[in-house]
Amino acid sequence: MGQKAGPGAGADQDRDRVAAATTLTLARKLAQEKKKSRRKNWLIAGIATVALAAHYYLPQQQQQHSQPTYADPVTLADPVTIGGVALPAVAAPVTRTASTLQDCLDSICAGRANCVHYAGGGGLYKYFSEWIKPLNLAYLITPAAVIRPRNVTEVAAVVKCAAKNGVKVQAKSGGHSYANYGSGGQDGAISVDLVNLQSVWVNTTGGSWQAHVGAGSKLGDVDDKLAPYKRAFAHGICPGVGIGGHATIGGLGPMSRMWGTCLDHVEEVEVVTATGAILRASTTQNVDLFWALRGAGAGFGIITEFVLKTHPEPAEVVDYVYNFQYSHLPEMVDFFMAWQNLVADPTLDRRLGTEFTLYPFGARVTATWYGSQAEFVSSGIMDRLPSGNDTVGLSRNSWLGHLLSQAQKEALRLGDVPNPFYSKSLGFTRRDLLTRAQTLDLFQWVDKAAKGTLAWFVIFDATGGKVADVGSNATAYAHRDKVFFYQSYAINVLRVSSTTRAFLEGFHNRLLGFLPAGEAHGTYPGYVDPFLKFPQQEYWLANLPVLEGIKSKWDAGDVFHNPQSVRPAVKKKGT
Image (tube, rainbow, N blue to C red; front, top):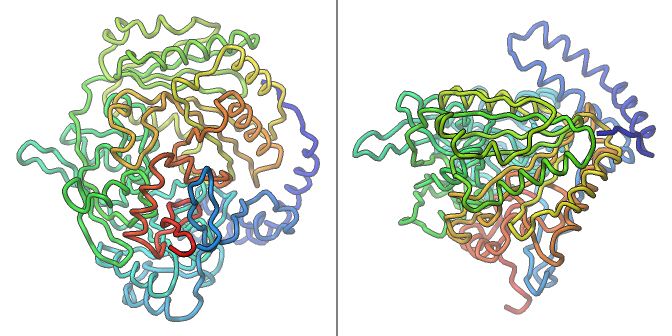
């Protein structure tokens, strides 16, 4: 699709030149670090160095789009309401510089090396590159401290320190939050890095095949440890994502239509609550807390262990890729409409997971079939997609071969390497399906819009199937009625330009204009969007009031806090 320069392109280039010039000192430091260090993360540290320079050294007026601005705290006497429903107050985290917090955390570490690091202790470069390790360099957060507890007892002690000193807490598992919420999402929080909690073992007695998974484990590592047992569970395709966030917000992936979300596999957890208590939660213990943790976990506690149900791994997996380089827009529209009709079919075989991806040079449909190639061909699914002017790729894999293939594809998008990027998303039910005229209008707009980068793509990702079998109020996850989500990404080198941000926002707003007005359509809480006006309503929809009540019971002081987490229910004045 065409690339055009926007009116702000020159200003963006000027800002990038200034940003690049200010990196010289830090870049020299990076070169010295590369020579003397044996660590393999120098590239990641270097990208972070450049972004830090752009973020901290550019004049403030040039950073006006770098981070969202959050509303001032709202008092209980003056609540904000939407449709008669009071919204919780959004209070900024309190930063404590007194030695009491540091003394408290130091007592947990008891002199242990690489246990805790504080803002300002050892230099900004080291803190960001070795401790904070942000994924999205467009939102640089400075926590008051990053601590790496060894066990659940130490996690509980950290929470008690935070509560005592009035500091907010967030857990970090894989560090893949789009807005770096594992670092608190705002300056001054305690980031609890669960990197030391990576134990995985499988209960083979009694035929349960439950996997006990430490909350700091990465999805790829869990797969590897389940492989000897030929067991599997539903999850996304990026192996570097941590189970701690993935299994508490939803956890969607190509096998979700067949097996459900990742959180649907959670049968029990060990969790630290806001008082520092260590509890078990399940459908029989602390039931309300367990309900909230499966969909809105960041605001309710720090899970240290998951007990997951598993499935026998599929004997064969078929990966299908169809690239479509269009010659004119109507062909692209027909291509999308055929894909949308397929995924909206309520009788579609649940063994299929599929995406439609729009990118600068065309479109691509990828599909995964959890069965044999003969079964895939006989299903007739390939016949329901149009033939075109490019290639079809069909490959057979083992389960682990399939996971590797998916990971390689994901690495071409965001992967684990930090970048400044921006993203938007939205969920679609069957009543939200696009007409052909709307799709043509949307694609024409994309073709003409200035983008500010060639590194952009828009993914439409099928859901439904087994996910929809679970009622929308069975867990805190509220998107059981969706048939697909869209998510957009755009990456810039030093900073997200105003042109790039305007492109993704324009695409999003155009889609919103096609949907029924006056409704909260909702978006997947794993696709964090710091610029949502009412994020809690979008993430949790009708489940939000119940979540607010549970929050008031288990964390009335909002110890577990990020800018978009669930708040305690707001009491009106005089109640």
